[in-house]
Length: 371
Image (cartoon, rainbow, N blue to C red):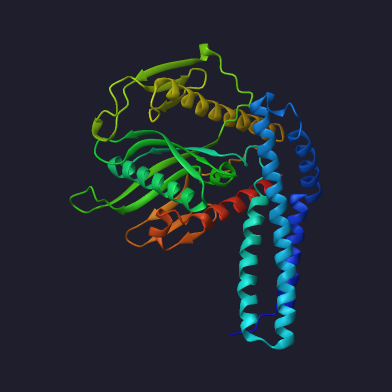
């Protein structure tokens, strides 16, 4: 086993950390904390709960950012001291401990490096995700349900809350569509790289001849709307239909018309909600998701206009962004980043961090090339 060159490794760690510090702008973080602390201490802060929540949430987030950077800096310093002691005393066990800590710090730096790339306007927010079955019949509906499980398992592993907001069940198996909310720091920025068309290739469990089937599902990701966002939707632009909530196989969840379908007439965007207990709650949830989609649409239109004015109208995403092949071989491959994994079950169980990290780095590279 080759001996670790700790001197070179520590230089590399410090170089990477300095780059992250520069991008993070530590002095700006400290200035923000001072300003937000002053605002949070104002006696009339909670006169407006929406503003108060935004201030305290922002303060907590900036404090966490600074603490994370400071802890990582301390860990690098401590590793250097540990290596010096181990080498002085020629202590093999302590050198092994230093090796393990070196790997752990590398992983933390890589994770922090990805977070620094999440600097979009809405990246720090929670996310609303909609999965829709595409071509492929019952296999596509089953695939949509597999993706729902994959993302909710991913959220659980990260300690994020995942709440199902609407489900439309297919007749035979699976889902026509599902909308769910994932609430956690940077959930939107992180999961936005999952938007696009996902493709599944497998022996169909629904085909009595055991033939291979290709099916598709679309994933849409929008940021969670906040009460302070200025998205006003006139009542005249909204059409609301109510219907009875239903579960798998058409079985009634309740006997009242509590489900809500909301259509935004100018854009044709349709949002359905049925998982809340009352029509009022479903209507509020539908309006919130509609506002989220319109907020993102507005941002996309502004970005498209800027690109048009700059003479650059390149699309960032292809239609098919990832393939999940379960037969004739086992492979999940991202078609943008070329990242691939042979353990398909682990991926479908929510182990998708490597795909997400590669996607975030790929997106940053695309944006850099376009500028």
